[in-house]
Each structure stands twice: as C-alpha cells, then as structure tokens.
Length: 297
Image (cartoon, rainbow, N blue to C red):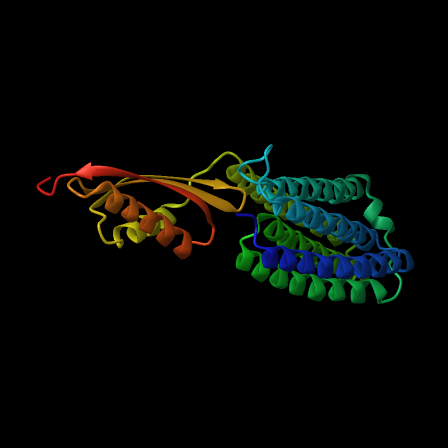
C-alpha cells in the first residue's frame, strides 16, 4: 500500500503555499534590510530564502515516498520522506550557523556600534514576517499531523524558526532605534540557539524512523487490545512493531484453541489482520502467527 494519494496532494499543496509566502517574504525583507541598512533584516531574508529550498525538498520527498512498491524496493519508498526531513534539518543547522556567526562577529568586532537604521520599513517587515510565518507554522503543523508526515512537520518547524528569527530581528531593530544597537546581534544569537534545537529534534526524529524504531507503548497497547477484541483470540503472545518512514510494520503472535480446525484458526488470523489495518491506517503491513493453546492452560 503506497502513501494515500490525497495525503500527497495535501502535502504538496501546503508546501506550495509555503513556497509562495516565503518568496514574498524573502523579497520584502531583503529590500527592507537594504533600504533600512539592517543586517538583522537581511539575515532574516536569507532565512526565508532557505525556507523556499525547504519547501521544494518536502515536495520532492513526498512525491518519491508515495511511489508504489517495486522489484528493487519491495517495502515501498516511505523513507524518502525521512531523507527530506534530514535535508531540512541540515538546512536549519546551516541557517542557524550563518545567523549566529554573523551576529557574534558583530558583537566581538564592535561592528554593531556603527548600526544606523533608517525609517520604519525594517520594523514593518519584521512584524509582517512574524505574523505570516506563525500562521504558516500552524497551517503546516495541523496538516502534518493530519497526514502523519515527518517532512511536513519538519517544514512547519522551519516556519516557526523563521518567525522566531524575525522576533529577534524586531527586538534588535527596535533596540537600535532606541539607542541600544547591541540588542540586534544578541537577539540573533539567542534565536540561532533555538534554531539549532529545532534542527536537532527534527534530525533525531528522522533517524529514529530510519532505523526501525518501535512504536510508543501506548500505540502497542492499542494494537494488542484490538487483537484481543477479535473473537477466538485467547491471548497475545508477542508483538513487535517498527516505524518505516511514516508507516508502521507489525509482527504479532496470538493464541487460539488448539482443537480448532485449521480453516477456523486461519480465519481468526485474518480477522486480527483486518482489524488492526482498519483500526490503524498508519499500519502498512501486519504479519499474524497463530499458536495453539489448550483451553485448560
């Protein structure tokens, strides 16, 4: 079973909306930074430009992950979405590093003392960016949870990091206009650290999904209960799960009455298989093994 086509369309649509918004913000913030002579705003424009790149990665990753299984990839292509998330985390690390390095350079060289901002355009650009990027964060996050997309969730946090970067720019620009220019690079350094934290979390989640990490205990208990609710199942002897991209593979051993005919035991196995796949859409494949059990055991 490949990634649902409607989910792919949702992911592509959300990413395209983000790309269009980021192109607008990149141009607006870059022009504002040049006119107002704000290093913080031009750095923020670079961050928005990296989000355009991130949106393209998500679209490519989702398109590849939705491909049907083939001879060379019998388990599907879902891990391409993890690859997309890893690339996004790398983009965030680089973006945070760029902002942090430039800000520390200003602090240690004293370059912030020469900061002279002109007009209110940089402030308007920062406020516009915060509002737009925070709205994009929630829009993308809601849809990422809706379709259980790792890459789309990474993109949501990319939007949030840009919003926080703009908060830093706003504080810095406001401080510079009030006669405290050092606030601009200090705020950018703090935002850089937050961006690093988000990038690490995205990286860790993507790696967990690529190395067959098991489901959380709550999910496993729900799967066990689903199997136990099937008539004829006496117990669940073993349950193994592994996350494969944004899908789950399940191996389960159940016990049934040893006196049952083979056809009835097989039917119980099919019922467990169908119950789990219907109850949990994220389960791509389940292997059910039936153990014989005496009624007096």
